Image (cartoon, rainbow, N blue to C red; front, side, top):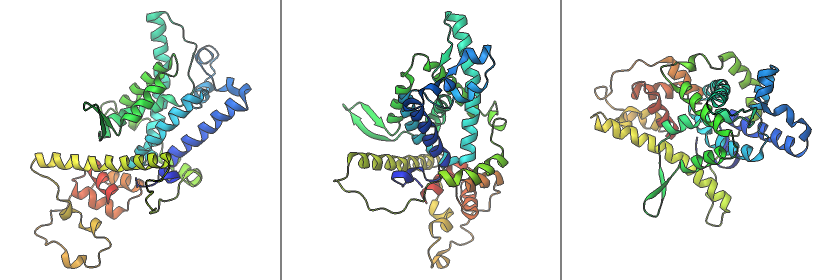
Length: 344
């Protein structure tokens, strides 16, 4: 799933692809050809509060009017597509919707607090889909493990996450009041991920809405399934080599998660034996599998599987049989089951 190159890097990520193409195209058109329409996409807080122009919340918080912000946010969305692949389009869109709504509220709150404490009146903020982009740094920090790629001067480590943080820092410093959007986005991401507040149960995309979009928009923005391509040699261009390194980092992320879970299990005295617990997945194409099936004494008793977690794995593209096997073997641990299925 993470081995694609080129345009197939957005395989199983139609929402990420739409967020890359549509807002970026509109932003470029507004900058180059339709400058007189930019006023309709300005994030004007004064017009929202005084004239009740609520529509500006939608327009002003979706399309960037600064091409630098468009470029940085597009690169970040491309890197964050891993969450849509891992959790499915519906859960990913629910997170973006919840973060968008919460960050809109926190934007207004932070502006009022800034005016009350420092006496600074802020009438407008940078436009664009920036709140949810900054909110995605919360699951990125908490759920994506660090994999060291290189070391500088023997002390400073460069990891698979360094480039993403640099892009976020670049976006943070691109405007005078963009720190408000960054702070509101981070707070909204923390609130949405909180298991105490249960915000994800309220601010979510209904299943019928997800089905409508899957029938109408997914065929337009879906990418072809990646094929086995010939490895590019040393004569490849710098861009292709960089793309290969990024795809390699995707694979290293998932391998690191599997290794981390195995170490935890080993420390607890109960490391998972993948060879014993996942024979149907590893030998699904082996015609001699029946001759090497483990005895009933070695097979653990069946574990009751949550249908909700089975449905979540099926939304990611796995079959029901594989999902059941993975969840039974991992004792209903969705992260462990997902990591194994992604690698096999």
